[in-house]
Length: 358
Length: 263
Image (cartoon, rainbow over all chains, first blue to last red; front, top):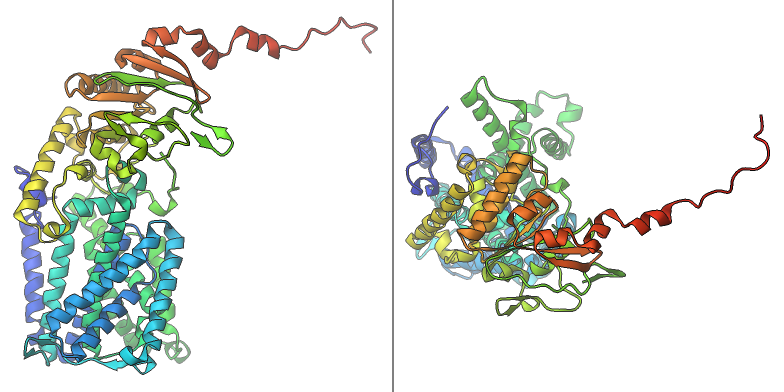
């Protein structure tokens, strides 16, 4: 058990709470920095995807995990970012500018989709965002003069003011830098008043309002920020695949993002990363085990969908706090051995709470 | 205040003086909490006005109530369950934040200073209400009595001029209720905060309140000192019923039986 002696308020504001965290995150960063030198091309590509999905997951986590507004149409923002960025880069706009514009346009769309969130909650908001996702996907498919329609669109390599990032190692580092920046932005936000306002809205709208939080403004801010971050992920996604088409940003993608944050652990930044690792490594694991399964199962076309669905059900039933929640439990168990109690992490499930007034 | 065919609060008019403890009492369904929800703008009155200092509250948006200096607690505790006690109290400093979104994203020196200042203020509330041990604990795991205090602390963190307490002692044991009475007195006398509360526990009411308003079925019954109101006939009738009430319920005396009782 680690005891932290607090002697200054600054200690509670710091990102790393103790030396152990500094050490382990430094190790992680170092490992990520040397990864391109050690890992083969294929695994580096997978790692890049993990980073991209982590950023997208962070975006969805902000709005769903921290502000409590569920969105089943987040692939639309991923698509907004990807297409805006793709079109701009192909027009010759330098990468940083195109990225900023992609994020800004996604954020603007986020504000629009945030508007129903001011009126509807829970499952109804889910339906509103779901249909929004369909609309955006349809626009990608029909607006052929810009998006190339269902034939898709090729995206040129990123060009940072004349410096072309053509190799996958360079692109990996670009993703790493952006992931770190997005994570820091989210962490900073969460340790200051805006982040607390988001959490307050998630846990009790009535009392958030009576504490002076402007619900409409903060919900829209949350949607806008979330959309911007997901849009950045979309831009990176477009570069990684070098080819985008509307069917990549459909319902399945939205559900994968939702799966990512639920499996990773709702309401934790770690959850977005763990969820992304899960989401990318799961298909690999499935294809690895395919050969050992009877061919009727192993060769079945919907195997991945079935496994994903079962994993989601299992998590919702047995570990609603996701992989990160499980890790917290294991850590607490080890730290407190033998004093761990079964009910220590029992929480009221917020979705079971009625929306009562006072 | 009218909800469809129900007049929940009808023609209730009262004035709370600066620095006093004013209590609303009344049987269940009298409209006390509705009055609170009207003041904190969860409801918009169908007619009538509410003034706080020089502001007409009916013209103010719900989230602006807090910046005017009115903070409230809820009858069924409404804390931010999945946040620590400290974070809950820091949310109370929201109206005093003074930092914008961008300075928070980059966590500038200004934001850092604002965070420390907020923490400093919150710590004083923690000291006042003896919450030191619970500071870093999740609200979701706290016992009811502590949550009640945390909610009071969160309301105090906003730095209010007037505090609305909806049944501060409900669900508390005798000891916790007496602590609550001390705190309410402290809040009034040392911090100079006006307190408007709804309360059922008459011993707490008479200990701390300067004036009491009794309500029944959305209407005012009596105002005055706790003792005056307790002895008011209308109030006693509302709680216990009157002699006439009871006699009207009595069955009319039957005429004496005639004839034989069957064997």
